[in-house]
Length: 169
Image 1 (cartoon, rainbow, N blue to C red):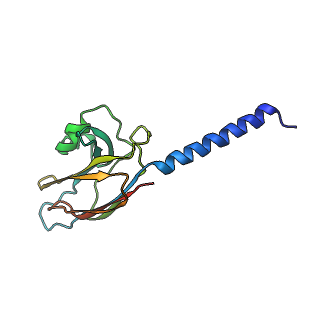
Image 2 (tube, one colour; image 1 turned 120 degrees about the vertical axis):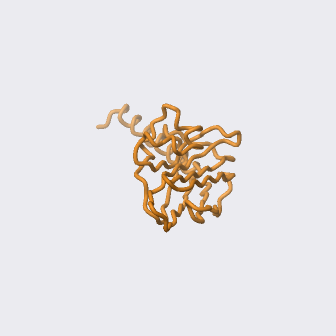
Image 3 (cartoon, rainbow, N blue to C red; image 1 turned 60 degrees about the vertical axis):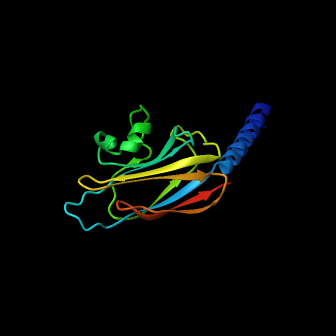
């Protein structure tokens, strides 16, 4: 025979799981299709890439992607470095190796680096692409995370036309 405390505990766990699933369904999500072009330059170095969100007042909210070879080169991503790189935030969960030319998908599940849900609303999406002995591209795009849709971003040289899809729940 089951004890009452076991049944109550199981019921509480089910209710908590239901609320967690509901909260996750409410979080806005982004899918970024970032295209790095095949440049005919010598020497060619793979670019460093940073993608992050800011409030309309330009306060860093979270970093979505960070592609560098070593942490010592974070500062080469100047715009991102000024906003987030100089902090003591741990970027291990979103950092990765530099990429070859091609199209890459960056998915964001609506949470900051600590796992807290980011409130739906208006934000600035920043994309910075920098290549050693090469150029620098930086784009800032206004997003409303409550308004679903696909937005085109025009890169200049270091990244090509790319897309952001907002999935508002």
